[in-house]
Image: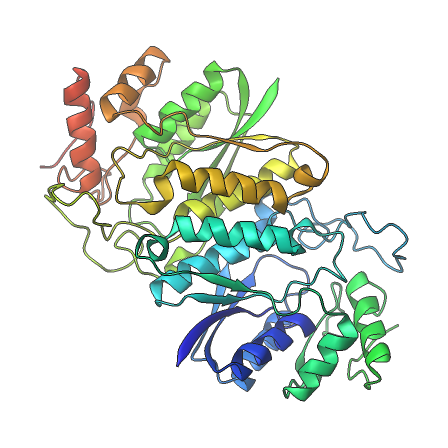
Length: 226
Length: 226
């Protein structure tokens, strides 16, 4: 069987992405990151998703994004609540500079070591239009760079970065995931959960999640405090 | 003054690179990595070099490259000794998959946060011809990707990755560094130092260092055990 490194955060998108890779008959090598995020409860969701799709391995990499701050996800800055999406081009404070580049770089290293030519990442250009590193042109440039960065490139193998969700709406992602057997009750989206892991219901991520389930016509299994 | 993020490992190349950035009147923001390398004594050299060039800040980022192994620098594999350079295209076991990509990704994130458009990295395509991520075409591809990955790109600023040493011989690097005031006695190169930080004299890095000082006609200040 073909191997795939799948970046699994434990949210809706990466969980669905994992289901797609499994459906395409890849053996899953799940990779998650402990990066000082205030919502590290998501890693428990990542673990459950990796198990649900029979991952051959699941590595949780410790990285120190707090070392340079700059985002409300990794610092003392407030997570914004009840934001409207009036300004499509505004980059929210939850944006973590170079996060996807750092995550994909680790995935590239691991892929090289386990002799794997396929990486799956659940980026989405629809809901995260304000994040520069969720766009197709960025992913294409990363793929080009990664093929020059590694032995794979020199040995004539081609590393492919798969982004099966990039143009899907959240509702379509949820509908697809349900078809592929994702149990969304074990996923986590909230940027600012309470100590019991309950979702705040008001951060961008909760708002997008709620609307997604509503638009998909699927009951939302999340416990919200608001 | 212009800011530059300079990747400083504490070796000859990155120290000289730091001197070049200082000479070009950049304010230095030094960045180093604790990545499970067996030669972490190099970080003390990095600290001294950052001080010597009046760095405005020096961040040592903890990252977990041991999480996926695959290199003799980060695992129990033996560091190769007394290697000859017969096979130019051979990738040695000291190669750490995706290391420069991971380092540059962190530098890209920090640069974005401190509003800096210049990153310096002391890669060298002459001595490290076997490392895919030391080639000019790789660096160019990284730069393209990084400009798409970040706010900088969107806001019309251009991030530049400077590689002033890429085509220099080790002897030329040392001669340039001495002209620019680098104190090489505080630098460290050995991949496999003893507990007191003395260089083994036999790993690739020691061999290249020794030959470099010899070719430059400059006394080598290193304490070698062999």
